[in-house]
Length: 149
Image 1 (spheres, rainbow, N blue to C red):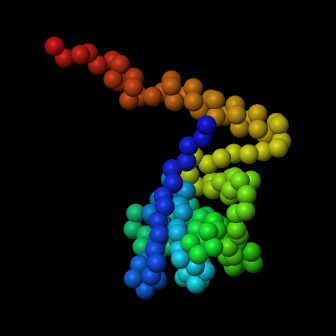
Image 2 (cartoon, rainbow, N blue to C red):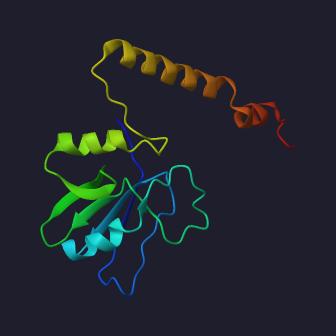
């Protein structure tokens, strides 16, 4: 089982509302009424993985999911020749492909058809899990504290 934090937002009036990225720890989905809103979103797309987002008020992460209300379509942006185009998601496989691209979050999916590469990633994950158990200083400190009478 895998869990993904998801942030869903929507807007219906380009003049009234402004959308921007506030976190990299979620999969962002922005619902818009129709394709007329796409150019406004494209103009603010950026790779925000290396930026401090606390004071961001303009940039939209380039790995955002877009839901078009009028056509009931989900898609993501692909950058080709310095231009972003919206790629529709038609199947579950397409959705998992998008999630593999979503590497900014610590909860990203890792997929590989190379057995050795997968085994190495699995070993690293297991070692990380063991280190969290062994070096969890908060839990260790709580265990050493004596109960108050």
